[in-house]
Image (cartoon, rainbow, N blue to C red; front, side):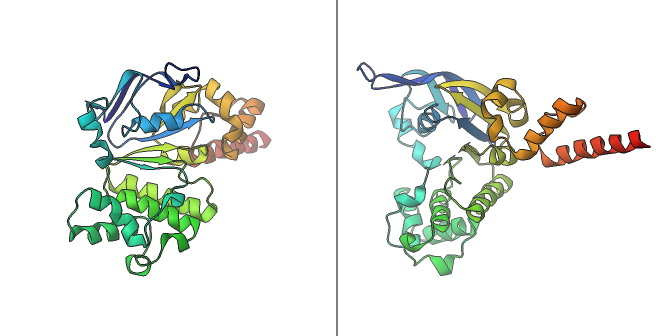
Length: 289
């Protein structure tokens, strides 16, 4: 059974008014447990609206979406979703409000009615997952930390709740190179050590290639492509829309393919591209000999 299943999902803002706008239009897809899904799309394409359906913040105007096999339109079930689906919204460090890092992470655990004995265990474990030392940081105010560290604390506060589905909305946006690398390492660690299903919204295609098993492409509220990462990014319409955002090494492969013709331009991963370039250079060497 899919962990997420959307059928003809449609959502309209301000229904029945002069401001009515269709934000999602007849979207159908399935996500299996343990998948890492990347979502890309231009501003206004429906990305944020879609992820707000995944924990019941929004409900469909038409169609349906099931999480763990249950329809989110069931209010009794929808009110429990936050316990299983964790969302780290864009710039979460701006939403911290507790006086210490410990209390910031413990806040959600208290709402889950986790025992007093278990709360410190979970706080420590979640901080370790994001590469922060428990003893040296728990008494510090989140507001006194750098933006990158505060974001890692925000991620830790969600991980402490042990969600089965983790949603990351532009989780590396605005961070410097070191901050982005730290967040990417956290996601890799989660992938390796758990069966958590991860949904990532990002404009950084390099990150999606590195981390995601599948990609969904949204445009004007429609799902124009969904599938395995290398297949979606090999589609001509997707490349036409996002080619300038592709990593330089993939753009290079396409230019070489146009020039020489015998290059596999569908290669997405460094190892494959290294092999393609090796074979190309070897061919030049053989021709000279």
